[in-house]
Amino acid sequence: MTHVRPSSGTPDGFRAVRLAGTSATRPAVLDDKYGTGGGIGDDRSAFRYTGAGDADLSLSGSAVEGPRTGTMEPRPSHIVFWIGDGSAVIIGEDGVRSAVRPGQPFLLAASLRYEFEAATNRVSMLHLSDRLLRSALAADGVQVAGPLRFRRVESDTDLAPLRSALQTLGTAITAPEVEGRARAELNLRVARVVVATFPVDVPATTSSERLRDALTYIQEHAHGVVTLADIAAAAGMSPRGLQQSFNRSVGVSPLAHLRNVRLDAVHEALRSADPSTAAVAEVARDWGFAHLGRFSGAYRERFGELPSVTLRSGVHAED
Image (cartoon, rainbow, N blue to C red; front, top):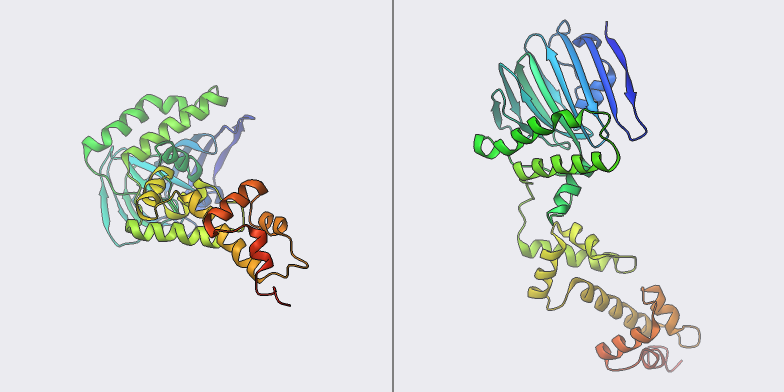
């Protein structure tokens, strides 16, 4: 039988929970949280579980009996875990086996599937939402397209800042009185230490491939609302890095290139339009040009004539 102490909560999203039972009676909420719906080891193994925090950052601990094996399917949050004794082995999707020693923080990316073998009685876990980690990366000027993945880190020297942060801030993470702005700042502080400890593993793409992704995104989305941040995210680059890449390879900024793509689209539309029914202003607005005076100036600079001239001399000019 599983004994559950009802979660306590606050309007700020803070929750605290205590559970106890055996593997056979584990509540579904834990399997959803950890992606362990396929079961964990011996059904007779007893456990005690506590957790506290909000939707973006929480700290939990589990006291368990006996060795366990199982699979963690992709889950809602990223998890930094460390064992208090014994040993654990994590097998990633790439088949690499990583031995985890007591006190060594290990990051499990939310989007990946892991197999595990554990012979430990105490496990601690820090849960971080994808949104929080992306905010922490953005604070350092990093934008990542696609699922977040991280490099393995095993050096005690590299892990020391995270260990220190967890020791210093662990009590605050589980304290219900930390709320509002103070909790948001706490969450971001912890998340920035995590992403500084485990560098994000950006897919192996060359700068030219990322630039191509940015150009493709602009071409495919030029008819809608597009921001610099949108283009940077699509290319897996920071806005600053994107600006530098465009200036170096294209000769103009990303937004200037977007404007040129839209001007080319307007030019083609006016050439093929019927001047008796089409209007320059309407075509321009369809492609995101709200200020017609600036549009006309940019159009003339690019094509050497006013848009009205293009419309009058297009394919329907002699009809």
